[in-house]
Image (cartoon, rainbow, N blue to C red):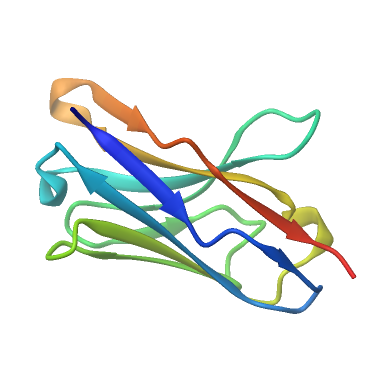
Length: 117
């Protein structure tokens, strides 16, 4: 079965950095675009970044210049490097795999990121 397992969430001080990972299994990873989303308490889930199956990244304006998404097709893993973290980045971060041509999408279970002094 398909599994997306996020890791790397933690408590970090403002201005700090974290790297999230999402390991995928049960899919042909290189065919999927991979995205990161986040959901803060009391708010809707929002898109953070996507890396296409070809490796092209796109970012939400709120994280542009601070976050970097990347993928390793040999390890079936997508990463989110988060720098200059702010309290407003506090959220549960979710990984999503999308195969547009087949209308398939899968979600991970999430990892908590808390930015606080």
